[in-house]
Amino acid sequence: MSQRSRVLPGFGLSLGFTLAYLSLIVLIPLSAVFIKSLGIGWDGLLEIISSERIIASLRLSFTVAIIAALVNVVFGLLLAWCLVRYTFPGKRIVDALVDLPFALPTAVAGIALTSLYASTGWVGQYLEPLGIKIAYTPLGITLALIFVGLPFVVRTVQPVLSDLETELEEAASALGANRFQIVTKIILPILLPALLTGFALSFARGVGEYGSVIFIAGNQPFKTEIAPLMIISRLEEYDYAGATTIAVVMLVISFAILFLINLLQAWASRRTGRSAR
Image (cartoon, rainbow, N blue to C red; front, side, top):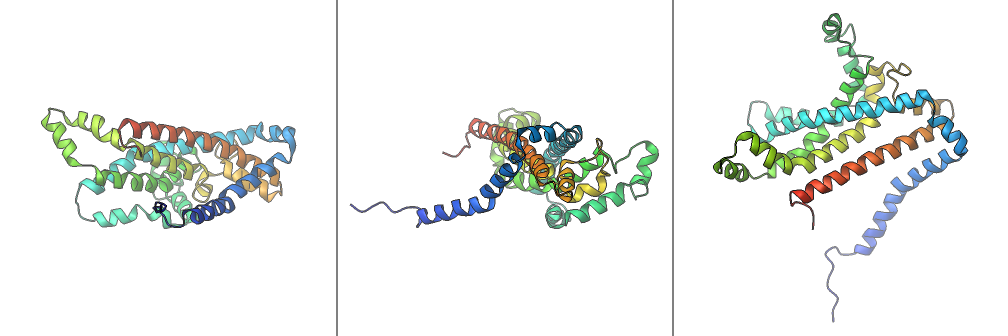
C-alpha cells in the first residue's frame, strides 16, 4: 500500500530547518538573557527589580504603550474603514503614507515630533500658552508610540474589512436592524480578532520603542524615563546583568499581556465561528 502523499513535500526537513532557525534567532538569545540575569543571584535580582526608578520606568513604558495601542485601535479602524469602503481623491497617497512609520528611521521620527511639539515648535508654540505641554511629557511619549504603532492596526484590519461581505449588512438592514445594531452586532464581532491582533502588535512595538521616544521624552527620572533607556544606561555602565534583568522583567510582563490578548483573540474567533479547524 503506497503511503499517502504529504501536502508539503519534505515536511520533516522543513520542520527541522524551521526549529533550528527559530532556536538560533529567538530561543537561544532569549535563554541567554535569562541565564545572564540569573547570574547575579536572587538577592541581586530582587534589588534591581525593587528599585523605585526602574519600577517608575516600567510603569511608564507599559502604561503609555497600552494607551497608544488603544488609541490606534480606534483611529486605525476608522482609517482602514475609509480606505476600504470609500473612494476619494488622494486615496492611494493616504494608503501609502500609512506605511511611512515602517520605512522612516525612528530617530528621525523622534526628532521631527520634538521639533513640532516643543515649546518653540510649529505646533507647540501655540499649545504651550493654553497650558498644553506635549514634548518632554508622557503625552509626548504616547504621541510618538501612536505614530509608530498605527500601521500595525490599519494593515491588520484592512484585509478583514476587504473580505467582509456587504451582503451581511444588507440582510441585517432588510430585517430591520439600524446602523448602530449592524455595527455592534455584525461588523465589530467579525473585526474583533483582527483588532486584538493589531492591538497586540502596536503594544509590542510601543513597549520596546526607543528611537522615536528618546528625543521627545526628555528622560527625566521618575517622570519621562522609559525602561529601554534604563537598559541602555546599564549597558553603558557595563552592568550587563542589570540590563538583562530589566529586559527579563519587560519580557515576562509583555508575554503575559500578549498571552492574555491571544486568549481573547481565540475566544472571539470561536464566538464568530471563524476559528481555524
